[in-house]
Image (cartoon, rainbow, N blue to C red; front, top):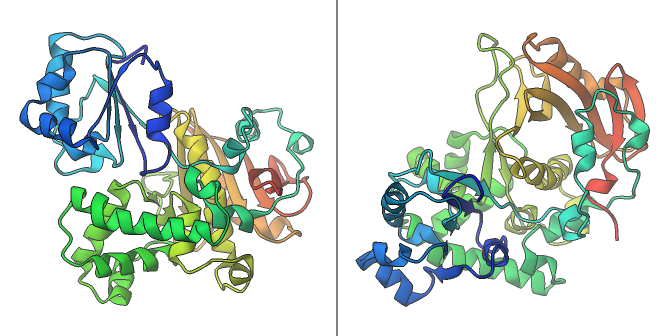
Length: 394
């Protein structure tokens, strides 16, 4: 807010955007487009909402044309921090948003809570940054018991985190119903809500996998273009992330598909019918759900500095793969996630193939196999590290 006139905070509904922006300079004028009167004024005379500066405008995705009025105001009088906007949709992905406010705005994403945030550990993500340090030692990695099924089923939405079952399940049911009947209709006309909800459930069963839209459309008994549009709407609504592959070299034969993750693991588990740790333990995709839970923290790490941090996966056509590639200031850390307590150098094969494929312009810092056992070296700049602190047990 000290650098640019417009700051846009996007994220899924109930992630905490309103609470956050109301605590940033509380003396600011605050207006929400969830208010019927403000909404009508935004449609009829958007300029009138912007005459008092600084101003915070909540839920601006309801009137995308309002961004044009913001652009005109900024061009007339530019002053850092004047406009703080929130949206329960990724405005850059919305077809109706023609004005990106290029050069005038920064877009920040507020992800749902990860476990270390919810526990108010202010330095809770520092171990991930330490992986990029040239003097990293496995002994400095936190050793803590973990309980990832507990965090998977709870997710990261503040209201759900504060509830216990069965109330939490009722909350997730209400969240999906509200999204289908209200938020979704603001983004696009969907002719069949049951079809859309079926796509949501099928997508929840595909966490951590390469997304095959033709296969998903076939299972949903829908045309492929319809399924493609529904997935785009889920991404625009900040509910899913389609993780892009990391390209080690433009000429390398890489898998071009993207991997599917939900921005809130609790919502994904609920949509997939996982309600208890017992049901999760019996699920055939046990390892993929652990990946989804770890992704909850990695997306928060990325969102803290989106200008210099990126998150990818890697896989080549020979089948070698790495679950996550963390990128920070052109330096790379490769992460493989395992549910077992025992790991060997064979579990790091994908990381080794990735390291050998690197061009000299990229700096490979280290590789880590996150598992349920203790920390130890696996090779040169290659470590086995416990994932417990990412999903701490009560």
